[in-house]
Length: 291
Image (tube, rainbow, N blue to C red):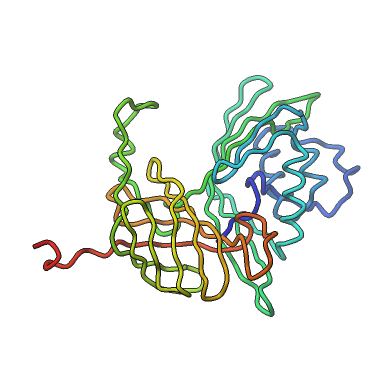
């Protein structure tokens, strides 16, 4: 149930199959710099990423789930782990828009972060739909990434969850209306997409309850703005981890990711490093239960 450690740009990628010294010609425009970063991530080329990203100690960036990087060392450490753990990485860009003003540029991008991880004799493929925003600056003629923010594009897992008309009709950046916690209580059909595992969960109003897989139980830690986060525990095979799903506007579906935090005695599994994607559907109550 995880997502690898990083930013897409945190997962940015390119192995130019050349040495760092051959980077004599720096990218002349911010879009080229962004695409080179994506290639560097996919090709596990940390030196290329290092050159294309600023190393200011006070730069703050965010990845999925609100995880924060301060400066280059935090990010470099997680990227090294990701490059060791993933056998192969692919990052196709599905959408990229760049704006430039003087020596500053900013972008909005959507990518599919595809990672291949060995599980025994098999190789598991996980697709993480992500969106990225960030700021670049031209320093001494070279475009470098300063700060970025990465979020999980849950709606892309199987079609949009939000109504396009509703999204297009609202131009407010801040809402003063009170936000109520969604009612997630009830029975849910759950699909682990990659392995096609199906089971049921019975959830109470606090977001907690058992599910029919290895005696499992979900515990909710946070529900806010349709983002539902929590942990799962499976005593049947002695495993546990976390989950993060995005509820549809009507609260009847949820799509997102799951990851391991412990398997048997192994407790040093990086958060969101190994796992997959979820699709939840709420089971409609029978007519008899409404009487």
